[in-house]
Image (tube, rainbow, N blue to C red):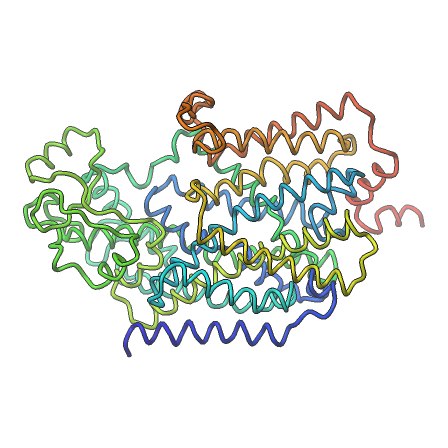
Length: 600
């Protein structure tokens, strides 16, 4: 069957499944709309949580980043996985026991301040809207490649699909849809990985294949990859850092506490009947997440090896990488390269006019590499590959069957749509529940609150679509910026709210604002946003990565430290929280039934 027709059938069937679930799982009350009625099975909720957690960034970008960065890309594995463990074990059970299913509502009640709740809403909206830009952009990219439409049309289609099952179904519809999306995306991710691992190493388990020898060779795949990338002027694959070691640590922490502070996953722990079920679903979600996250390093390494082997046959044969005929003739490039060139995410420029594709690091400082390049007559790197295509193009590069390629298309779309829906639900509940009901109209009826929630959701979808169609100038860093905002604002407030009786409303409010300000200032000074044109933006922060070599993507950790310091410092010199709030904190952390044995 033709590839394009296969893709249409597989993607069409997955969309029909999502829409069918939306009709079946319509929300009829605010409880069903916000927390799916609170009756979801822990295993099913774990699967939905995994789909909500694993966004387009996990499915599409993470393995591509690992392929591009090598060992340094492990910050995403450690940060996102560690963030989930932090959330599931240290935050979610306490929030579930507290009984408030939105982060702003918890912050408002714990810090006995409507102002604190409003500041939390602002931080939540900024982080969630920033994050959802990346999801909608991912939807556009996937549609443009696999359905043969423009990226803009892809975003419109994605908006329509999310509208159909999120606006009418609320959290109930989203939950059951995310269960289906998890099944689609995990098969889409692991099946190609199994095929590719078998092709390259003979081992069907990618996790073990990554440490195995190449088929027909005594050389481990990672050792050969290290040799190839260093010979072509790139950093050694297995030892590269994400900047400096300090930046790597701060980057990991920022991703970890940022993901733990993002609200769209926290609310999932309110969709199960009991606190015990919340813990159980957290454990199941970790199992489901691990299936993809333990596969990602193998996918990244094997995708990089296959890409370089496609462009330079000597990569696999062990010949001279700089031989005259070592690189691929442009006219003989495989069909997958032609298809991806149409998206603009893969580009070729024939700098030396030889009609061949030279792919190497032309910014290398290695005299040995430069000498080989000059001898070969190469005039610079001629191939630009966006890391985001590595997972989506991987089965095509490896020449896998059409149905596998179609499955990956459906999986990429499922990952982007599932997280977009979760984020839009968080935005909707923040507006309808925390602002409209919590601030402006506390006496609103359940029917009108449900209507407000659906209108808010529709408005959020339109805004997300518009931002996807017209991304801001800093769009490339939007996902990292979203984590940085959540890390520097919401996470410290939640942590202090649970584990400190002394932090008061003044400390929490000023701490959140301080964390938000320093993080945005550092990021936007690098990007030149909000400053007068012509100003030397980087001089405002001491030059590029001027704060101890920390990149803007890792600066959320610094923002969080500022938040903690300001909150604790201000709380120490102002009045302690009321006694009933301190008792509330004690009760939240004390298991039900504690002390009853002594009483008897």
